[in-house]
Image (cartoon, rainbow, N blue to C red; front, side, top):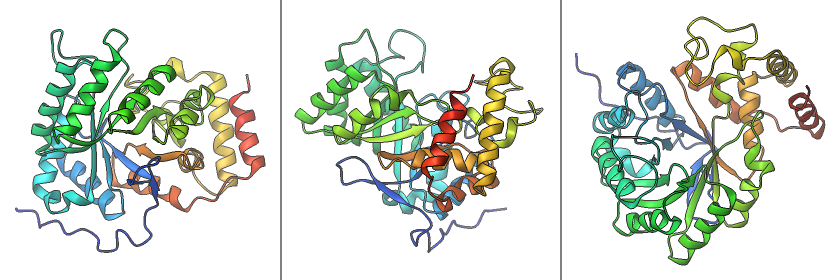
Length: 335
């Protein structure tokens, strides 16, 4: 049986999504980005992947976050994306903001990791082939490399833009001093850094307290938050223990030891506050990230259309009162 030709929702831009400007650029990004870290690799059901992608696009999500080694296995999330481009999204390429990254291990040997020019350029060339694209909208250095001169990594990003392989560049998880050097270096070469991507959620606020968020804002750089739900901890999933089949039960990024009595109490207290606000813990956690105007977009992962539908409810969340924000800070600092 041949699937019908995909026809997107004609009302997808009629108030279904919020769009936020990335720093001092001309780019507006959807408040939610669809992340491909999990659930889009070779072990995932392709029909489910396609259904989630269709649902996201139909509801105004224009930003798609990938990396060279997303899967599992490495590279297969980009391959899945390439299949979906060919089957559904080729006519809508110019409506999409597609990002990928390189910086973590991808292939064996000394040239398949970190931040050398050889690795970044080779990796992006491979990514474009897997995704069936001529260019990406945004290419990130996925992590800071302490052993490669910053000038080499950053000049590779500059040249990638000048070669037409990416329209914009960004950095992810760089320390503050190196990030500020990157902002200056790129700006002086007329390829300004579009985005800093960092981990940011109620339980992990280091980019705020450590100055990363403020520095990016001062430099006119957007901020994209990943792991807004802290690997599922900021959902209802673990309120009553560790469910069978969960990421924690499979020891994928989380282990049962991570769910300490203190953390469990924090999650339950946050869920109680969310219930008082008339929403799920996940929706409150996403809304908490988006309460900051400096946050350009928040990356959400999903394993089903239903989960993505739940995430989109954040767009109807009420604003936080000062009292509610104080309660959240009190909860996360309790011992």
